[in-house]
Image 1 (cartoon, rainbow, N blue to C red):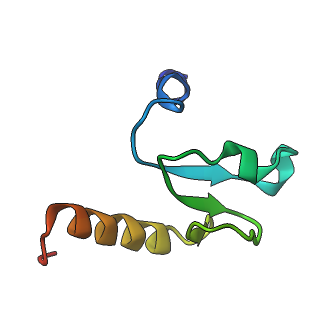
Image 2: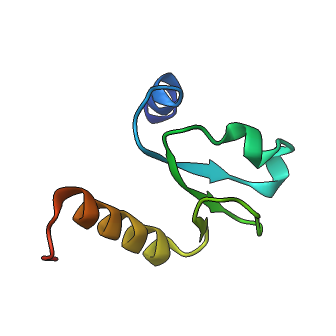
Length: 78
C-alpha cells in the first residue's frame, strides 16, 4: 500500500518516468503520456512517438534505464 500511494502521489510531478500501461485498463495510453514520460512499458503493441517496452521483458526495461542513465550522466561504464 505504501509504495502504491507514493507512486500515485508523484505521477503528475515533473520527473522523468516510464509509464506502465496495461491493455486491460480500459484507458487510452495517449492521454496518460505527459512531457516527462521517457517510455511506455506495456503488455500490448502501441503506436507512440516514445519507446514502447515489453512489460513482460524486465531485462529490456532494465537496459532502457541503464542506457538512459548513461546518456544522462555521460558515463560509459557498467
